[in-house]
Length: 76
Image (cartoon, rainbow, N blue to C red; front, side):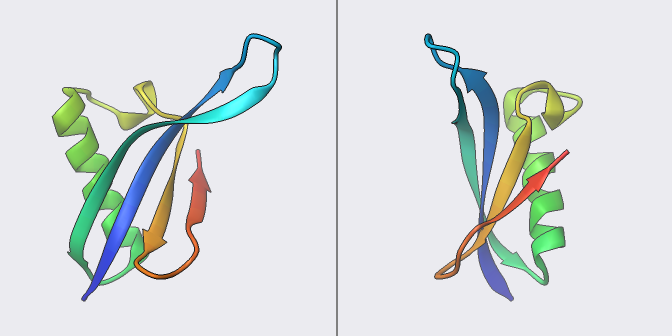
């Protein structure tokens, strides 16, 4: 099993109109068989922590990072 870090982001506009990604929260998934399973676990945990029915109400996308590797961005 592998350790993953899942960071949720919201796209916002700066005062001069440039888009930037603003991190909402980072969730560590210590034991998951795949990045997909880590993402699903993080989605559920984020919803529970934020008291949301759907994580997309607070974030636009997330990145899944395997410890020691580059993150993979997932946009919905």
